[in-house]
Image (cartoon, rainbow, N blue to C red; front, side, top):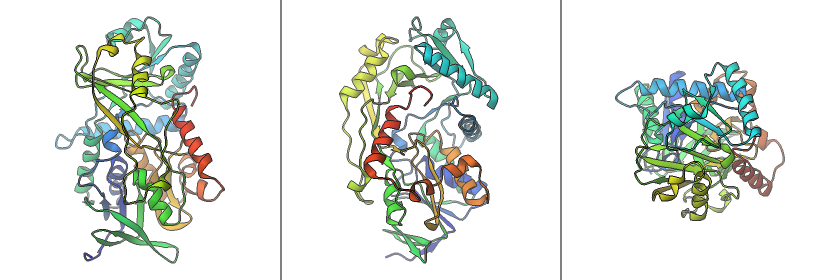
Length: 409
């Protein structure tokens, strides 16, 4: 066993969330931070499978403002030419196919205006100019947000890491955390396969393994891995990186250009989850084989607006286990069950786009004696201090995934 080392704070997990948390901690003056990642490189697991979409139009003022703050952070990171975040501020088109969705978009526009976010309804002709390959003839409404866009998830993670290193944060890859060590109800460190690290605080940003790390420390949380897939086609004429992101909630679809190809994904009406109790901390989640029926249904849903999709071959399928919670909200902040144990998990497929905000919320939950009502509502205590069961929790988490684009969700 290697000699032990010390750090004020250990962040477990080197994806977008873990590195985003480390960056925000360092900006807040907490520079004695060590990020531990089991894979040989950062951003190698769930982050690497993310589509990277960043949308600010939300149903609540709190979430809209948070998304706006995240965009500001991404724009700032992009200015560093040595480690840009892969941020493309191409705007987004949100497409309504029925009147109820138009009414929802109208309410969302009102929220955006309250938050100071620029959005507007545009007519079909203007939308056609922005996305020439889509057929807007049957579209009921299009909501345009010029400051939305998309990220390259690995680039964003490396940008966080670069800035955090400059502020004093250290990173240790190829190191597996075995357990959180505890004495008299307080975190004392972590044991890894490379030795012990003594610390005062552990931030759990372990993605699909966040459940295991918490459970082993005596903090039982309903963090449910739910399968998510999207495909990238072969090269197609008319596609280029400057095209806006497109969301079609009534077809449960999102799409964007991936260089000169089409990236298309969606939310499955019959989702598949994995019980984290079925695999240990030191094992990967179950492997995922491409579900061609599901991917084919995505293409089928898109074809009325883009018939060309049926002619495009699929080059790659991306798939992973983003974690969902029964109430669809992050699990962020210290646990009353274990002093020094802080959660940054249950990201509900917002791990990349929400990473800046998650980092900010983690810092607020740790250092502010009276965090905002919203941040307080994300506490892990909402689960540990009340009764729940795994069967119901998994059903509710899958329901949230399946209804990701449901009206007013």
